[in-house]
Every structure is written in structure tokens, then in C-alpha cells.
Length: 125
Image (cartoon, rainbow, N blue to C red; front, side, top):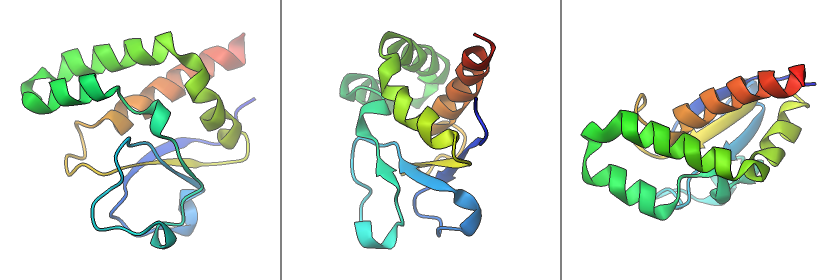
């Protein structure tokens, strides 16, 4: 059963004691940052959108709803990539870290919502 929550934070924001497990969910390493400074629990590249989907979305940011649907479909097709995140959640809060400047339209927001929704379904099963 889940005991923690998923929250989202920009990787460039300073670490905080309230972050819990800190998981970078980008495929690409964020520019200008050193691993030693980030207090990461995990760099989970495989949970990020596929390179093709990421490039498709970055070519036209007006495709947000379509990006969201396609990313959710990728997660549906590959549920095992979520296992580590649910295991961390059992121990407490999990902060999903992303690099983009857009705080509203980024894959980490979609991922957090997906995890919350599917986590509740997992608990009921």
C-alpha cells in the first residue's frame, strides 16, 4: 500500500528536507549541474518520454494535450518502468525532478498525475 505522495519540482530548485526521495525523470542530464550537488536518490531515464515523443513535442509546444495522451500511452505500454517509483513511494514522499523551464507543461507533471491515478487503482486491486 502506498504511504507517500508524488510531487514535482524543477531540478534547478535547491534540495529540501521535505523532498523525500529525489528522482530525476529526464532522459538528458540537466545543463550546468553536477551529480554531487543534487542529492539524487535515483536518475530514472527510462520513465521519461521516448526521444521521438520528446522531439515531436518540442517542435511545437501547442501540442500539449496530444503530448500528454501519447506519453500516457507510452506509460500504459511499459508499466514495469514505474515499479521503482512505487517502491520509493512506500517509504514516503517522492519528488519527481525535471529540467525544463515550463512548470506547467512538462512530462513530470503528467507522470505525477499518472502515478497518483494508477497508484490508487493498484491499491484497490
